[in-house]
Length: 400
Image 1 (cartoon, one colour):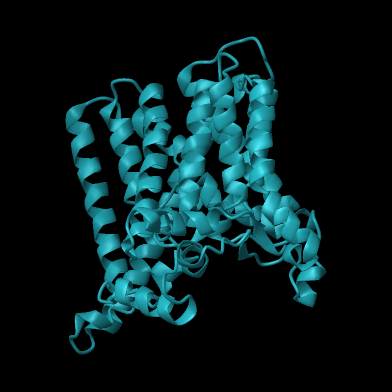
Image 2: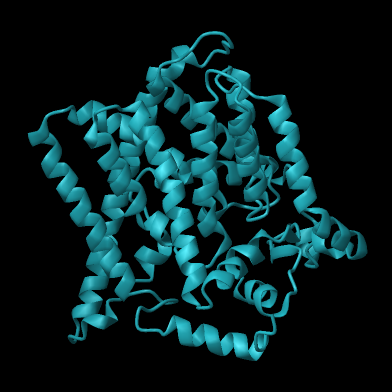
């Protein structure tokens, strides 16, 4: 992404396709180049794309928070729970780098926020933004069909009112933005294919035929709502930074036991939360286009639709999903947990304070360990200098 962005900003060469995917070729469109190269026109610094990424992620979170605020009016517990479980969650923070899935939280937030405003009436602007959230995700990562199926399920249920003029406008904008890619694809059809012979054996529906990818999507849904974090955070932690003889080995084994227990317990809690939410929402799952639903019911319908959309996508996909393939649904997997937390803890300030503080302390602790013990990244590395050296070597000086 750094290469694509700097090539556009420094040389005026904007690549019309994005990163290569595992099986189906390159991501279409030039959005991945612009999210890096665009900020460089405002501030020519390696930190400009990072700041822009942070702002996009913050905007995505705030749109989701706006929905939570409407669903739980006056409940500081609901909003604080979502803040902790989303913004401080290692599932979320693990992707805080120039990496295409990192931008998807913005698409998820925009999709949810616009869907919320489309539940009662057809709104032109909201429909345009809603469809554009899908089009933007399409140019960021191949997981975008999740949002398509999610919108389709909400529309079928009757809680998503669509302005067809808005759909046409947004579709036209998306198609126009893809014209350079389509021209490049016409000249080089290999952009849509992976050269790996094994990858060419895959097909749409491969996931459903093999069953395991769909089951793995179910597990990821539960893990997103729990503290069963990525294996890299649990299994790759060695505590070598402690610097005391024999202590790193002891801490490593204690850490794996501790995180294993925490992960198992919270996955069970996430499962209970989802079953509780499903029990609450089951009478409202039946299609009813003319009957309005309560805000809480709408949120749980949206979350249920996101879960089903993930299963459909996993079944159609020609790969076995990893956690970044489903990061679009991460915030939606938290909705049943927030529902369960607010119902279980109630509104008592004394009952709210201690668990919230404990959760905050736990997440801060986990993130501190992750910061100090990553095999791939280090806070001591000079990101700016590395970027400057890479750009000088691979892109060249700025000519525009």
